[in-house]
Image 1 (tube, rainbow, N blue to C red):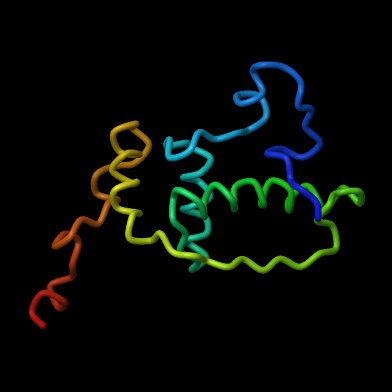
Image 2 (tube, helix red, strand yellow):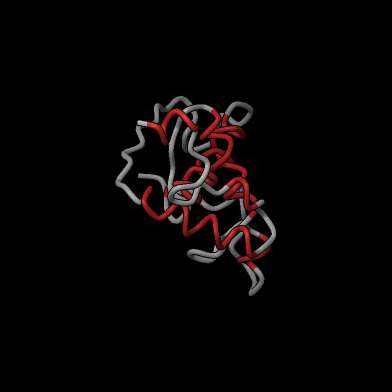
Length: 122
C-alpha cells in the first residue's frame, strides 16, 4: 500500500518539516483541520476533530491534486472511510478551538444550549 505524505510530492528533508510539510500536532487546534471539519459537516459527514478531520485534511490534499497528477498514489482509486467514533469529544475540541480564536462561542453546542423551543417543550 501507499503511504500518503502530509502534502503531495513533499520532500522530507530538514528539521522544519512539521511546519513546511503540513504535519499536525495531535490534538492541537489547526485552521486546516477546522476548515475540513466544516466543509464535510456542510456535506452531511460528521467527523471528530482528533482523528477524522486531520485524516480527511490530508486525504483531500491528495484527492484534489490527483485530478491533475496521473502519478498520484490515489489517482483512479475509490475511497472508503470507516468512521470509528470520537464524536462525543467534538464539543470539548471545539472549546479548544474557541480558546485559540478559531471558533466563535455561538458555534459550539453545549448541553442544553442551542435547542429549538419545540425540542424543549417535548
